[in-house]
Image 1 (cartoon, rainbow, N blue to C red):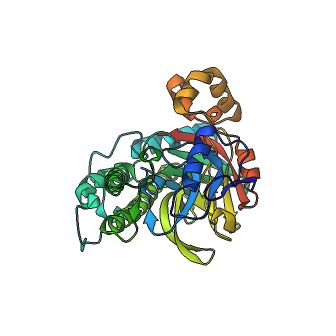
Image 2 (spheres, rainbow, N blue to C red):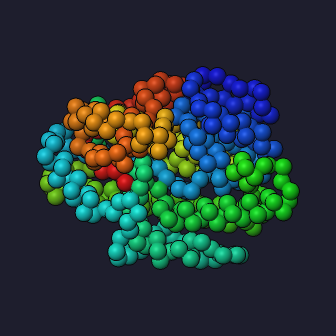
Image 3 (tube, rainbow, N blue to C red):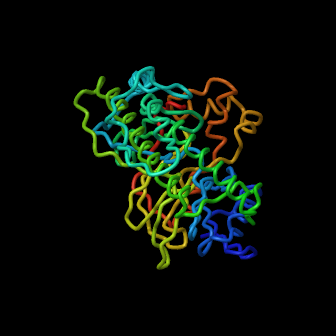
Length: 390
């Protein structure tokens, strides 16, 4: 931990020195909510989000806050270790071509419904109200196995253990967005009716945990977390197919998966509390996690140290140091392309519109990792070889 802020209703514990003003204001809003348990934890990759800063961890008593989970419910990482120990640039390009053929990126979905086995089981005895999952189920059959946009990616990496790894980052697609918006809108409406003391401009409207609305949100949120995992599993299956088309004898270890946008009931400091992680990864003692850098920096397989002060959490990545519009205005296209070319990374940066995901728009991952040395230990360092961006 780098510092503790004690000026607010509850302490704010920070794992970074350079938190931006907007993110700090949001952290202070969290610390002044009436239902906060113990303190707020701010991870080393923190930056401003909507309502709750990205890289924030908040534990609550009696309520759940849809905006503190965010619109991409269940967004996270998965990674697979292969038996490959070397791979050249031309081969990477062929594999990446196969990945692009098999996995829709950006706002694209599959033209046909995917096998229903990839959809998590939905509880048919839904008890009350409108189920967003049921409304969106048929559409979601075309969304499962798709990457999405912005910072979502598929990456081929070389590990410090001498093996090639396959990593991808994606979430719950439009299904998660629809669930998040529906329940956040309900929370806003309910908070206005109650004359809630939580200011609307904080974007932190809440639902009582055991109200019909709170129960419904939790059920549908948890479904979206499972859907996001299925989405990553199907994409990873197709990434492995693209590799095996060129290297048919390749063997693959079991998938490692983590989510970094969700809320879950956990026991901390002797009490059961609802832990909201928005751009934060759980890091229980010995738990394996994934912390990506940028397409021009290292990523890491880590093991959690179970730090109680962080609610057993760590960063979810490097974290942005520039907003998307700012990156497009201020970064130099030639410099960013040269950075990746010099590293030998096969990438997709071609014009100014791609600069929002350039390496220069992200924080220094080595500093982020150093700042959370009391949260995780590094198991494998991964260097990028080829990147498919959403």
